[in-house]
Figure 1 (cartoon, rainbow, N blue to C red):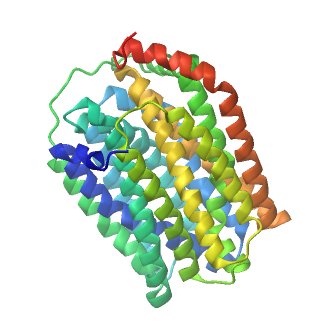
Figure 2 (tube, helix red, strand yellow):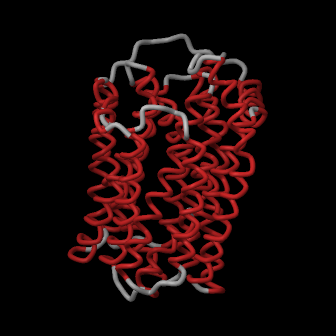
Figure 3 (tube, rainbow, N blue to C red):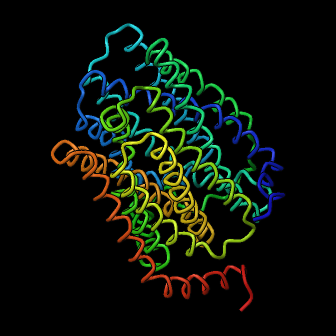
Length: 417
């Protein structure tokens, strides 16, 4: 790790604009995330509904991302992302007005969560694929991806802490309002970005063929297939415990909204640490080792959380959970973007988004159902054990993955034969 390299991609003007605009917007997004989960639990007292809301907000990504990936490779990525941010602002404004005028009902939240998921299905693959267009030097790609994770998790650290205090003082409505206003920053930054026009490699009259080509490339390329599959399992069981945090804060730890904010901030602090470590790396090599080591750690942390009722120990465990989560996910992201063909990058990253964000709602639903029937501790222990098993599966395939990845590195000129 080289500390001088941590912010090196900020030397690119376009990426710098994107970075700071996203930073403001993401703080608002995390405030809304905490406020929404607390609002649902306050209104219903149901851990199942927590899982259901998580499901409805992300299941559209599972269904639609592979198709939006074709759009990402076909059309202007910057315009697509700007359009998505405007839609996010309108969705946030709708829930703000419902809450502020005390008219919100659970079905409103479910419907708006579905809308959020549809917008995310457009935004996620576009955002991941846009990064390479924002940097001036291709060698800064890994750093830019890591800084994306860093700003995301810095917001995860700050947003929930602010949200916990705001909810305790004035209620959830102000959190939703601040999130609505935060989208102005990212829309402004995207409008200020200037990217030279380039030939789009995907023909506009061949959507079905483009989709099929992207699917075959993703799942017939062994290293990409292994990474996507591993990420899908992590998202299904390794990340689903997060949806239970409101109930964990109240029932297991006996706390309130401020306790939930502390837990989310601990996750964010660990994830931010991991993201900064990834940003300081100056090579794409050694990523597979990071993935299996921190997958094992993630599983052990989740199992440990199932046995604790102490706030301070929980904060330590969730810090380690955030650290292991982001190191695993950012390593997979960097690996995929390093080896993916530029002409198919949007489609590969759409399957990445599908695995990361599309499997999570199914996991949320499973976790909510298990917690309702068997309790939170049992659910955490089960999720942790499956995560540990996923680490073992990845380690088993690692040798062949490295051999085939080396061939691709040679073809791309990243290493000498």
